[in-house]
Length: 341
Image 1: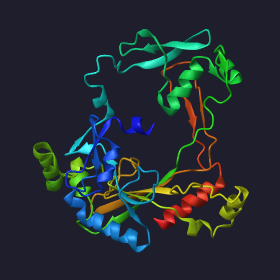
Image 2: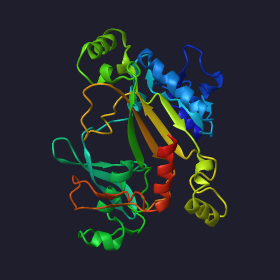
Image 3: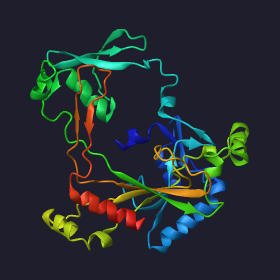
Image 4: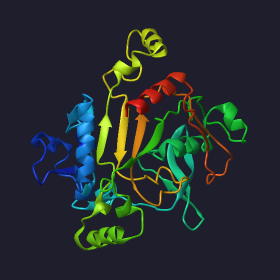
């Protein structure tokens, strides 16, 4: 499995800053991968953040792909030499692959209990049918996959009957047990010269210069994925002081509930600007420089979310209830993660 996960990539470390062992991330694939190119405009921010992280006793790491995710990490991503790539490059030159873009799945074609094809609505609004010679792979994402199954008659008979859909496979599990990790953002004011707000958010000379440098040299803050530095901590010492956590651990046969195998409790993303992508409902400050801290609880205990049909219209989005914080201990953990960060 690991071989196939890394097959599409080629890892680059042109400056020799990291261990040569990291070449296992990928060697012969079309997708370039590298550690974040820490842009000069944010150098002061990077240094201050790393110093603050280690001053609290937290470790640094250069590799989170080896099975141990722990510490403060310079992200690896598919931005190389100032250019962002995507897995579509893996399809270039593949004559045996056809991408039918702007299409929406309508239903699976199921014959004799086997999926043999799919009906889709094309970009022109017409219906198209595609039949498989070998197999049908449903990979429409966490929300659209269960919706497609239910529209095709695979799901809870009681739920499908509400929409007049004939049940082909009665499965109560379709659309159930949805989970996602909750995130909470908070913003801090930075000293002038430490953030990227003037380079990326506000009209002015610095933003114009960033655009010109990107256009002519593929260099500038516009080449950054912004999530260049990420923290992956465990906070056992904080959680052990909380009675609810201690009780949950005891009820879990002594296993730590949020990371029983040593996994990090949180992903903490540090963005050196006011991150309007996550806070679109709040106007960006007209002046000053900021840091957005994004705290993600990686393994929440709340796992009872649902995806249900709203109608039989394949173009209508499903009814989604992630059911965050169904388990109160998730709220306790998030509180501690925010305070720690």
